[in-house]
Image 1 (cartoon, rainbow, N blue to C red):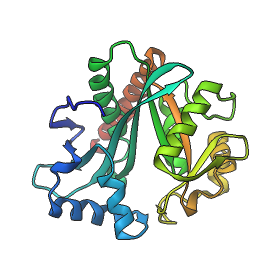
Image 2: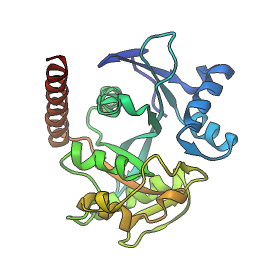
Image 3: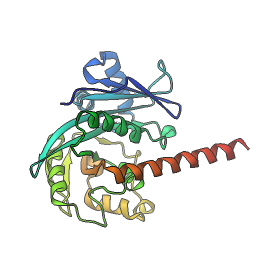
Image 4: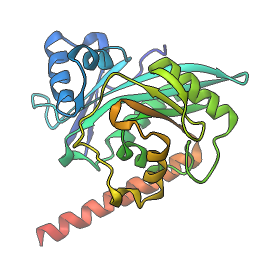
Length: 259
């Protein structure tokens, strides 16, 4: 495990992101995190709690220091060896946010903070972002944010990336097996509530959503699709472009609403 080199808090679009080493959480804080998560996830209290306590850090999202939680998440950072090369993998998980706060680039900001931490310690080691996605909404973050990611409907996954996905799936999930196109699927003992991210014919008209559904038809039962995104220069450029576009759209909506 990497040593932790992060700020305690960051401010973002009116939100306060607090980065906490998991052992530092009090019993009362763990209870509040799990209560918030249970609004979106189905699973036993023990399983939901383990999902947070088994990761390196927990991220708490509030509007003010003494305010109620409006979002939670976790981050793990691990080393892997693939084809003789060391890779650092950032693994965010259990990320949940009140609907009214979505679109504020929270996940992108969290990923950047942990990327900078890992890059300071390992200036020449490739760094990847991996996610185990329950829902099409999480999967859509990839094509809407980055230029290169796997798996995807229009390109085959390279062999090294496929093997890395297998190793990640094995670390974090059970019943790891190839999906319909050979991409890696795992199973975890919890899943999103049915009304959080249902897939209808409207969503399936998007080729990315259609691909996600074809690869992971058991998404509503606890199956997760393992995804991988290299955090290289081209992807950071893509992320900055899409982030700026979101900020501009939000600014225009505020101006229109105030008119």
